[in-house]
Image 1 (cartoon, helix red, strand yellow):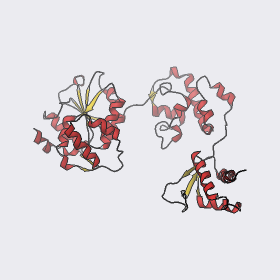
Image 2 (cartoon, helix red, strand yellow):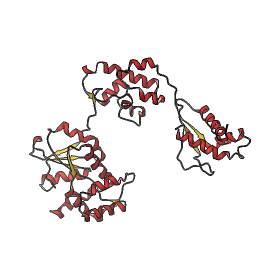
Image 3 (spheres, helix red, strand yellow):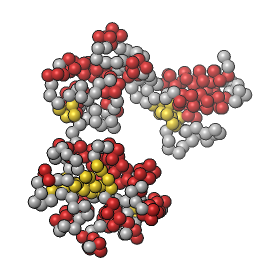
Image 4 (cartoon, helix red, strand yellow):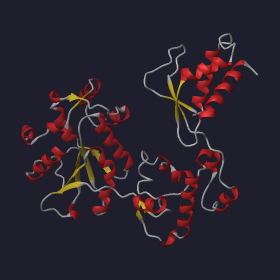
Amino acid sequence: MSKIDIIETRVRGFIEDIQHPKQKKKININDLELQLRRLLDDYFEMDGYTLFCHAIEALEAEGQLTPIQNNQFNGKTPSLALYYWVNVKVQEVKWDRLEMMKLGDQFDFSYYERHPEWQTKDEWTRIQNVYTFLQSSQERDIVSVEERSLELFGHEKFLVDSSEFPEGKGFLTRIGVSEEQLKMERYGEPFVFWLKQGKEINEIQRVLIVENLAFFHTSIQLLEAGQLDYEPELIIYGEGKKIEQSFSFFFKLFPPKSYLFYYAGDLDAESYGILIRLMERYPDCCIQPALKTYRKMLECFDQRNDQKRGQTQNTKYRDIFIQWFTDEEQELLVQLWQENKRIPQEVLTIETWRRWM
């Protein structure tokens, strides 16, 4: 057996001994190396630490170990994280192949054959519940995802909250079943909107979506005074990112026809992303930035402030957004980006609006 085989075999043995089938464990990497040194008299002669690092890297690549990123290291070169999670032990194949074949008319089990760690008792129970449902699905009505999730998996959030139920994420993909087959639908969240006084629902043509609550109320006042850009018949309060989930609710409320949607938000990275994702998700809808409104905001350039913390600055969204503007306006938008600044929608008030009247 080669030197590296000796080291790696020993390290793998240590890890296997402490792996748990259901919960991960924390180890100190210096303690692990100390055990190895005590077992091998020629550890230093064989440059054992370098081989030890290779073994740890191999186990990390396989997903057996995960470094804990807390800026603590083992104090050696090359450095390793001081603490690692020993991930749960991959379970052996448990499912009966005959039982899998019986359900094979509805499910493709190839994913589970490639990933035996998913062959758990709970996963099999979920699959059986779905199989039973599919036998009589033609007799069932369409309900919400939450309602069907509660019926089949015991909790209404199983398919919609991956933080609370990580095993729910990708479950339908693993078994190759669609939401339509389970007779369930993801309903859009209701949103707050304002219909122009005197207008009927079937008269709506132009719709303005505004990101922030303050400007939503300002827009209503401007609309009723006949001073709002684009003269929309309907204003929707987008409530930040929420509009990305609630926009589909529009088509439950209003008659099917062609609408013109204008979006107005802050001039910042997050708002660019909201708009572009809406355009990408609903390509059949005419959605575009409310340029007249954004240009008013650019005239308030001196009121720019710092970009919000935690925003993802996606240059793809920025570049698509600024294409709508003139070269001079693009220079200002790029300057905002480079300075890590933003122009909040709240620069537009009833008072400031008067300068454009």
